[in-house]
Figure 1: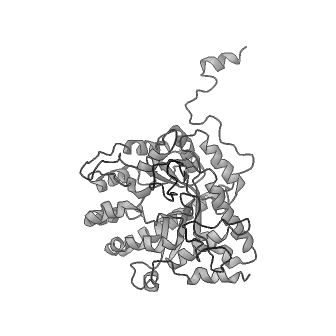
Figure 2: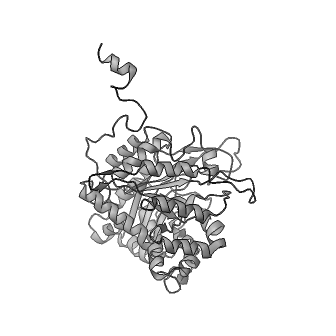
Figure 3: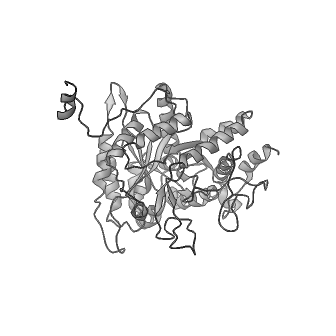
Length: 431
């Protein structure tokens, strides 16, 4: 097999649904973009991979006629990264946040007539996908192995910023699983997320305890992230869902998010360990209806603007930003270093350009400086800053590396009293 073919395809492929003109910069408000929100895998833990050589059944993106993807064996999983790089090149994306999918949709025996491929297709529940990060990391490892003697292709990985997502946000031991993944795949991970918290229907379909931003489990995870300079991408709805568009809800869930932000603000000497957050979709999901969203976003930025970025991907753009475009343009111009764009494409690198093109009317209204920050620089600069801080702290040159002896403090941030203050344990020591 000619290993130069995928590299060539990464430069030439235009994603499905995009014309060559749409993929080029001629009619676009910016030449290059960053994508702050991309899922390499879908809700069945599958996704596109580069198949232009026909090595596997299906299309050039690996999709079979029945809607399923072929399984990639050991040594071939790097094709997922090749597809991602192809989608990025066609979409003019220079930096991208990459995560797996923390849930997998169950195919219930009550609905054998329709295999679900998205979480809303049926009422069957979603389950935690603890191995989703292994799939992402394995794709990067296989890519590195394939191109071990090709510095140019290896250099393409610097555009990809993988985040850990496959953990239970209600498990006090979630931080230990994150540490485990970092040790298993040193030098790969650059952030944590998308953390699912208060995600309307997706939360309702999950089994067991429901996550929220200020849950004790996340109060352990997020300070760990700050201490190790890992930004956190979190989906936390600002309000409960409404029964209809006319039912306006107050931002009842916002306090939980703000409390998490406040808990994650701390400094030791001259070093700030305040956790940086990317707030997905500005707190909006389907059927989340509140009044004056831009007001609440600005209030959050006034109080915690040094640690929060607003991701404008998914439904918030059409449901809130474009209906009040003048107001949002004014808000972004006041805080141009706090907003990001993202595709929120799910397992489909071929759709990155199509999704990011939706931002063109907004970007066209911004000043040149603000446009560059929102479309590209804010995400790219955040990842560069975090990488430099990790490097200065001896935590790796790009992705994080932990010493094999590292263990997260057993009872940190659990509410457990120290032994000396515990009525029982303090007396057990004197027996």
